[in-house]
Length: 141
Image (cartoon, rainbow, N blue to C red; front, side, top):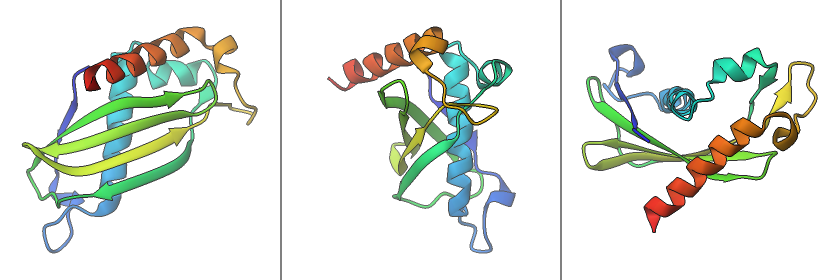
């Protein structure tokens, strides 16, 4: 799985030239969308099938500041998936330095608000997520 790479834009910084903390969350979403494209099950496809994936929880550990022009590499890894809650881990790096470690949890609902039984209703998605979870575990061992 290739990391998502982006450059810090000028408008994402404050008067001190430091990236505003909220932008990291936007970058996590960009990386998550890219991750889904890479596993072959795009978010656009999921929405076309009437399924949304809202954030249930989010946590961030800011390690170092980013500034305009920095190139940020974001790795996305499936931490866990039980068919109801998908937990994703993010690590953002500038060069070799970790600038942020984060985690998000997502649930899956129909547009009308009803929960989706992922293993029954979206088995292809579940298989792709499980394959990435296993790959991430093997990469750490």
